[in-house]
Every structure is written in structure tokens, then in C-alpha cells.
Image (tube, rainbow, N blue to C red):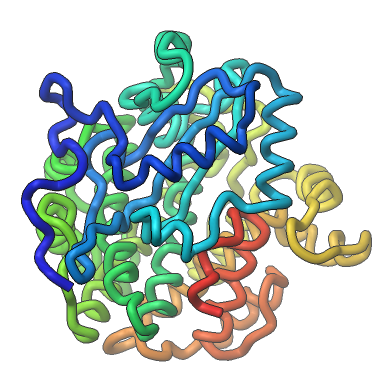
Amino acid sequence: MNAVPRDLPEPVDRFAPGTGSELSALLRRAADRVVERAGPALTALLLSGSHATGEAVWVDEDGRLLSLSDLDLYAVMRDEAAAAAARERTATTPLADARERHAWGLSAPLEVAFVTLAGLARMPARPGTVELARSARVLAGDTAVLAALPRWEQAAISAEERLLLLENRAFELLWALLASDRAGLRTRAHHAVMKTALDLAAARTLAAGELPADAAARVSRALELGAPAGTPSWLAGAWEGGASLWVDAMSWRRDGARAVSGAEHAAAWKAAARAWCVAWWAEGGEEASGSGTPDGGRASQDAPRRPRLPADPWERVLALAARGSLARRLRRSLAFAPRWGRAGLAERLRHAGAGTPPHRIHGSATVLILAAAQASGLPDEPRLPAGALHALHALGVCAAASFRDAAREVVGAWDRQLQSGERTADLA
């Protein structure tokens, strides 16, 4: 691995005139594949995320540039029937496997949402939709689509969406731990840790109803806000340890990826995991009802209601996983259709009382991060306390008794059931 050259393949200043407007030529073939898959009903292909803002992270691998950042695309279709058909085609035949993505210059997932403008308008405010409205770029099709995008406001992002942002980062951390000892994956694993660290800064600003435009501004504002209130004693100093990672994470994003030692990666992972626990603890207890937004507004009617949360971490996880009425948990469990494998009626209902299927998967990841944060030393093989094992059993996502086996099962469930199924291919 070599130092990343300064002439990066994409603009690095999203605000200067003419920057952040095109996808790197190195990744153009990925966009062409999506256009082909969408077919003639495609209205426009939008680029979002870090590749649109000029904040993507690249690595020089033996003289060849590879992107470590996900490629986030929105394929805006003519109508819902066309969008559903494109989603079905992609579920049956994935867009590209890891080898082909690597040949394109993408050492990260290719995330494509087949949507309509009407469907986008129904989406709630969340970090991804706020970013889409702010920085989307048209790669193919009608450029007038940009003016028709809904303008989501960061202050409207609900407590539920803020919690989901954090819970999804837990899977990034678990994947990074599992991947760190795999040949050729440590740089990607460290990128996941650096990305999580910066997302914690974003989460801190979201708790105040804000989402500054770029990573540097988010870090600056998060430092001004300081640590969240109500942190338990066993997490004393954890937020400050995570905040110290922000300097390294900003350098990683600005200058590109570099080789890291196993000890350096492990120390950064532990600091990020403990800071994540602080953010999760504060966000989970922010509003017992779960119905409010930072500016005093109301979330969507279908947003799950928050229970009053216990101080015991394992019981706290179970309470948050079971947020929402029993009727809602039963309804979502019955309607849940696994993307891989089959689940009969009895299997769908067995753990319905513990939460909807996504909330149980998210809760299982949270248990594992909490256990790792409590462990002494670096995260090699954290012990699962009795309370953690009880919580994992109640959630019913994994049956493993060891940390790494449980992490492998939970990340696999997340990838197979809630994502595209390509994130764990390298861990097989």
C-alpha cells in the first residue's frame, strides 16, 4: 500500500464552484451497470453520499486507486411498478460481486435505491435524505429531477431515526472487528472505524437538531456541544477517547487511507466502541415516548414509542428492542419476509414479543458492542456476561455463546436480512 496521491480522482471541496459534480471516471462502470439494470423507465440516476460531496476515502493499492467509501446511488424511476421491477431484478441477480466491484475501483458496497419522486416525498427526514437534498448529483437522465427533490430539514429528524443511525454503526464496528485479522481487509476495517468516529460527531449534532454540512463542521460543533449528559460511571472518559479519534478520522478522510498496525487498529476500535456506547445511551434515553423531534415537532404516526428505560445495560437493550406496541411487533413479525431462507409462521412469532425483526437484529449488535466496551484491554475476545447472554437469547437472532461467533451470526443476519447481502462475502 502506498500513500494516496494528492490528485484525487474526485473533487475534494464540495462548496467551490464546479466541484463535487461528477463521479470519478474510475467508478463510471458501476453507474453504467445501474443504468442498464434500471432500463428505459429510468428518469434519472443520482449520486449521493461521500462521492457526491467530495469526501470519499481512497487507497493506493500497488499503484491503483480504490475507493473505500460506499457508492450511494438513487435510481429515480418513472413509476412504482418500474421501481419494484428493478428492485426484484437486483434481488434475483446482484448488480456486481466483490471481484467485479474491485475491478471497477470500488472496494466497498454499491448501494442503489430504486425509487420514485413520490416515494422519496414519503420518506422521513433522516441523515441520508437530508444529504440527498443538499448534495445529489445527476449522473444520467433528467437534471430537472434535482429541483423536484423534497427538501428535508435536519431538525425534523426524529429520535427514532437518530437511534437507527447509531444502531447501524454498531454493525460497522462489528464487521471491522471480524475483518481486522483477514488478509487484505485491515485497511477497510480501519476505514469503518474512522467512518463510525465521524458519524458519532454527526449524531452529537443531530441530538441538538443540527447537521452541519461537512465532517469538519460536524466535528467542530460536536466539540462545542461536549459529551452527552447522563453517561453511566462505567463509561467515564469514553466520549473524550472517541473525540480524540476525530483528528485521525479527519486526516484519514482528507489525505486518504494508510497502513495501520494491528495494535493501532484495535486501540481505535475500542475507543470508537466506547464512545458509541455513550452516544447510544444518551440517544436511547433522550425521550421516553419516542414521539418527539429536536425542535418540538412530532415524528411520523408509525414511529415506535419508546419505553421508559432501565439503568441496567442489558435490560435497556431489551426495552429499546421492544419499542412499539405489541400489535406493531406482531404485525411486523408476520409481514417480515427473509431475503435468504424461509421462516414459517411459528418461527416468525416466536420472538415477536421481543421486538420487530429489524429491532431484534439491531438490539443484538448493541449487546455485543456494550460487552466489548465493558471488557478490559483491547477487543480480542471480550467475555459475554450472563446479562448479555440472556439478552441475546431473548432477542433470538444468534445462538452462539462466544463473542466472535455471536458477532459473526449477528452481522450475517443484518447483511442477509436488512442489507444487500454483499457486506459479509469477504468474511465467509
